[in-house]
Length: 278
Image (cartoon, rainbow, N blue to C red; front, top):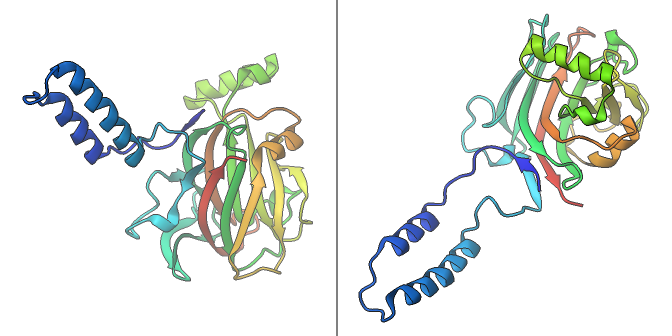
């Protein structure tokens, strides 16, 4: 099993119990150590079931549990801005309540940026990704095949970690140079699930800026405007079809609404993002 999100939360009830039972000196039990060991074993097993630790294998990984946030201040905990060099105007992301549910609102006006959560997930173990989104408009100049049209009212951006075993010598050299320049290896690849403006639904094409990012048109056009839509994809299979190889470890998940190329504007809403076992 391979996944890592934020540091695990302590369980005060379980931890206090284990501390007390191990530190208390037994006074009334004959064969003290043997009896205490059995008590510790039985009660520890009980508490591990009632108050399970984060080390247990989970059936789902809630990468973006926006609906569970308590306060609508700033950006979701565990997420951070994703910005790009030479792009000064950034999309604004805020936690809001829409139709009674806490979600992330993206407000973009001739701007580009995202929110990213850095993670480590084995796509073979958790191949299914689900999310919810709602858009309010599409772009007149949007075109998935051209740089000047490379804007989308909504996208889910999944990055994959650098894996030297899956690269040629020349590709490894490029990544080493990039690490020297930026202090870390860039993603080896990325899958972009997009809501296109005009592209045919189901289209899979390289991003016009880099072949290491593949664009998958999950939705397109105005048909579902102003409507919450739930999506589910097999990310593991999508990567193999897009790149022709086994996917490396997932290194991050981002939400992104950008309008810097088309010079248009958009307001978009993002709901919970979850990885599941098949």
